[in-house]
Amino acid sequence: MQLPDRMTDLLSMVRSGSITVKQAQDAQRSKALELNQSLHAAVCFHDSGDETYQGAFSGVALAHKDIFDMSGRAPGCGVNSGVDAPQTVPAEVLNLLRQQGAMHMASLVMAPCAAGATAQNPHFAACVNPLDSLAAVGGSSSGSAVAVASGMSYASLGSDTSGSVRIPAASCGILGLKTTLGLVSTQGCMPLAPSLDTIGVLARYAEDAQCVLQAVLTEGARSQLVEVNPQQLRLKAWFPPDLDPEVACVMLQALDEFGVEFHINHLHGFNDLSEWANQVLCKEVSQTFSKALQNAIAEPGVRSLAKFGTSVSEQAYQDAMHQRQKRCAAFLLQNLADADLLIFPALQVPLPDWREVEIGASSFCKPKFLGMFYYMGFLNYLGLPCLSLPAGRDRGGRPVAVQVLGRPLMDMALLEWAKSLESVWGKWSQRFSIH
Image (cartoon, rainbow, N blue to C red; front, side, top):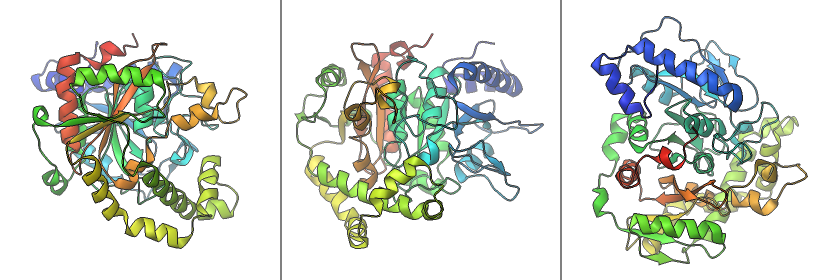
């Protein structure tokens, strides 16, 4: 059967009785299995057996980053294919989705231990960008971005500690939401840097992302969300002086479509916030993986981060943590006193070839590699919600994305604003069709 582009349309078909839950699940699984043969996004597919699926998500089969505990299975976290663990219970986000009828169809490839800004992973076949097989795929939620962009899955849960949802989303021309720190439970998700870790959602359509976000929130978390009229949001844009001119040109055209006329060239606190974010990230990685580091079995990405972490003094780390709330308040006052949303680039450079950001490759280009995540980490330190979304194409036809930063708990409002753009732009997939 021909599946609809949108998850919400599939749900409507199931509810109307035009397709059964089983037929919908089987169609999604068959499509994902076929696409995965060439894209290598999945670690494994899960057998649902004779389980029944009842709830708002009945008929939907989703694939998620292989970083979440499942019933009887510990995740592989980009290092292996997962292991049987009879005592393991599902991560809270997976449990909430399952309670509402969603099938967990597959676990997806990721950068080892979530410590990588690209899809580079020696343990699995390389993820292929469905928009351009030579283009890089961002990390660490690389399989999630490939699966969503290709149509293997309508949406996917990933984790974002320093851009790990937003970078892959930007590289594959889809939406990637980093949620407000603490809004979505990280119980049952492998920690990288616990003070920065957030669960995020990748999707092709804003309304699909809204549905998934709504599903993984507790009632208490839902009640905290800030509701706004997207038409009344005040917008401003940050054009960093070190932004690649080609990216700046695409971004400028997109801002014209957004109706954004207020541009700034200086973002107060960016450099310091990026440094504090890096200190916290690297210090906590060195703590999280201390045993693996001591036993010399840590993954290269972990070792690289932890190496800097050992040079961060305990005093510097504690200061970064104690001053965090005050610094966030100052950032909002200095940069968002006259706006509700701040729009700025996702990647500093046009999306590179994958060989140019493959560490150890002869064609490795350090500036392009750093440009994949340069504008990312400071937001995890601030704990603010941020949405990566496609803004256009570069001269080579590859996606150029922007980030949209909101105030605390404006997660759903960001998606509502993106949904209002879909009516202006038409389908996101028309800009980045893989067919």
